Amino acid sequence: MRAVVYHGPNQLLVEDRPLPDGPGRLVDVEACGICGTDLMIFAGRHPRTRPQLVLGHEFVGTLLEGVPESGLEAGSRVVCYPLVSCGECDACQNGLEHVCEILHLVGIDSPGGMARFARVAPEALYPVPQDLSSAVAVQVEPLAVCVHAANIAEITGDERVAIIGAGPIGVTLAIVLRQRGVKRIVLSDISLQRLEIARTLGFETAKAGSDLSARPGERPQGFDVVFECAGAAPAVTAAIAHARTGGKIVMVSIHKMPQPVDLQALSFRELRILGTRVYSRAEFRQAIDLLPSIQHDLARLVSRFIDMNQAQEVFAELNDGATDLKVVVKCRPNPEAPGGGG
Ligand SMILES: [Zn+2]
Ligand SMILES: [Zn+2]
Image (tube, rainbow, N blue to C red; front, top):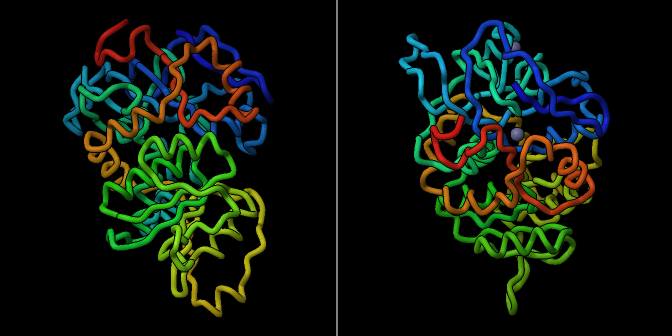
């Protein structure tokens, strides 16, 4: 079978590999999304990745063997819950399996699904509706990240919200919050192209560094909740600056280095900073349930559908600053037709 394989920094090859063996069920993959984590692996900046890895954790396909334990039949359309927890550490024992001390991910620590076929543990298989496009179905995983962030923020719909960073996660989060009834959402970014995409989806936007909170003629006021989705030091500073007194700052991006935080602002304005990491199984399911109602917005995030053999070139473009929000790799000749192709 063909697979997109990481061979070292900036080196992806499409290789002919034997069908994956071992435990788990075989999935005939139709498509796989490219995620920020994949781009970090490609750049050689992911500490756990080793060469010869088949990439991809955002994939959808057709289950070739049934799972009697969970009632999943062969032929079901499925996505993969990519987190693997130990079940024994303190976090796992306290119901926080998603922040397991030795959390592993499919497509990072074990072969992923940017390939013609993938083998997936039975407990990681989740059914998705047949009638969603591949472009939408591959977005369950980043959507789950956003569902988790909204849950941690305890969003009720009455909040005024700012999102720092209009990349794929920032924009997806805005879609989730709008669906939850949040009326005032402002996205900010340094990239004007990304803000333009957010505007075409109907969101209010502001250039990073400008005053996000004031509409023309309005007095500036802080936001009830600020989501930091940019992963850069200035974004952390901006998130704190834009939160109202008593407001919340939710860290959605994962920082690779410690960042300075204005603790005086935290004390003086009684701000709360909340950390988030991936999602629970319940939130992954919540994301699947949410897909049909926001599919039209999610479909618009996908700017390109590429063949496996374009991966090297497109990964390089994305790491070079291409403004695509989501690029999807076709793993089957005709992935848009659910269940079709071969
Ligand atoms: Zn992802
Ligand atoms: Zn654990």
